[in-house]
Length: 103
Image 1 (spheres, helix red, strand yellow):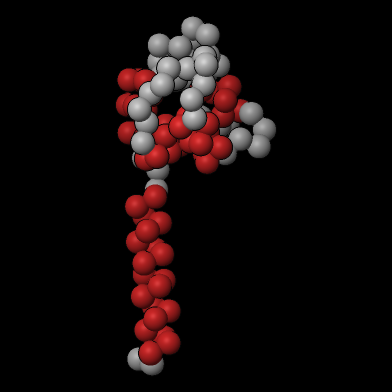
Image 2 (cartoon, rainbow, N blue to C red; image 1 turned 180 degrees about the horizontal axis):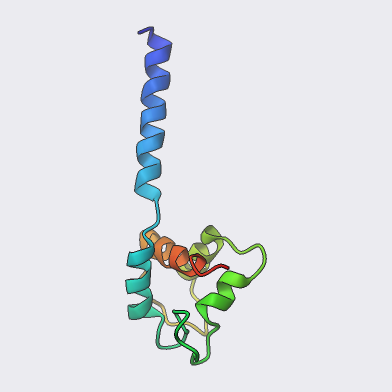
């Protein structure tokens, strides 16, 4: 294999393996939501009421909202939300769970 082909192969392999590490885990997001969000938000489609915060289904239904937007929002401090110690992966998993409700 020529040197430049080998470099391209390694770069592609690293990119693909990195992408797998960045994949969101919707089930983990659900568990984290139960822990951190359920007190104020309706986090499932079977929950009809929330205490103060919008339902996850309403968030997912917003036009142009993305997993990345939600994950970034979750990591910023907000006056109306508790300061949950969410890692980047935690926030991404919760965001993926929210967006899984998009209809």
